[in-house]
Image 1 (tube, rainbow, N blue to C red):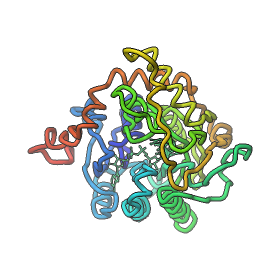
Image 2: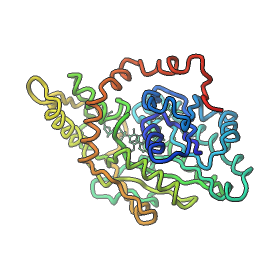
Image 3: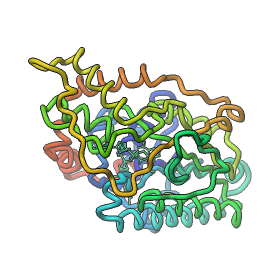
Image 4: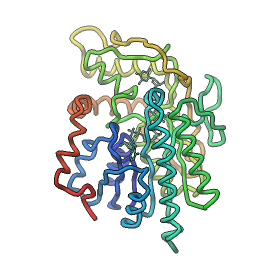
Length: 358
Ligand code: NAD
Ligand code: DAU
């Protein structure tokens, strides 16, 4: 089996669903269920014995060590993090705690567990660390895209905390030989994306008749990757990646924020038209994000050439699937916005042990 951290979040839950759709190898899913963790995402796995959910903190080394000893995973896929840049600007402490201390705890527990393995189990063990392109800082319009060799220049507390965790992961491979792999991925989008991030926020606000906030001039560029393609990249890195390597992951889909917002408004105009006028009329330019990175772009040559990974979706196909998903799952959005999704743990786990398989 494999141990996934943060498997109730946006990418983590997509990864868990994707993994179990294609494999019978069980998953232990360790998630603290912060505001970003949502068990609604995993409702279809409620009675699936291949999914063992554990509510807990990656900073709790005793818990992590117990889980490793009990379940003997062949790999750890570490996705748990505080992930929202704006929150890191308002309240950075949680980012330092979870992203740095939490990754350190995971590495320490993994190192002790791995040291106790032998033979094939030791040779095959992998620690996958999910990181971000934001560690590289920002690009000018004509700069080459971020490669794995680009120097780290993180600009937000979020990016700095992820950079610190990447350095820790690197050092555990270099010093102890722990078979780590790090992926640095660009902006994801798709189902179960928490509506504090640009794409789901635009869809939710548009449909609710609220202003659609665009920071600054809206000319910042992000390199968008459909979340299913990030999941396939992680599967590929786990299967064929070189221990100690880092892999940049991206879909070569650079768009300005305003272009993304216009695309979403135009699609909604077709699929869920307003009584009159266009959703574009709801766009509101607001004060910029402090320290806002201007452009991200990923050079994914290494993962493409070495491991043969390629994204299946273009921005056009991915964004269409995403808008349809949000239109078909308005209840999911409503439960996030009302806070009802936080009740799921009580509803589902009242009277049960939190780890539902031992
Ligand atoms: P998310 O915020 O949607 O989910 C994070 C999950 O981690 C949540 O389920 C939360 O409950 C859990 N978590 C937080 N703190 C925890 C703790 N101390 N212990 C256990 N669980 C904890 O994040 P996401 O957008 O799915 O991102 C997942 C990972 O991918 C992060 O490491 C992020 O840095 C990275 N990443 C995200 C993107 C993106 O576009 N979203 C792109 C590249 C990399
Ligand atoms: O690049 C990878 C990163 O992408 C991940 O590491 C982060 O975890 C993830 O949150 C994401 O970070 P961004 O800051 O790029 O994503 P966000 O959706 O918050 O913002 C995307 C762009 O849209 C960014 O330039 C800021 C802008 N924006 C965002 C919001 C929430 C707006 O213009 N208006 C908004 O209301």
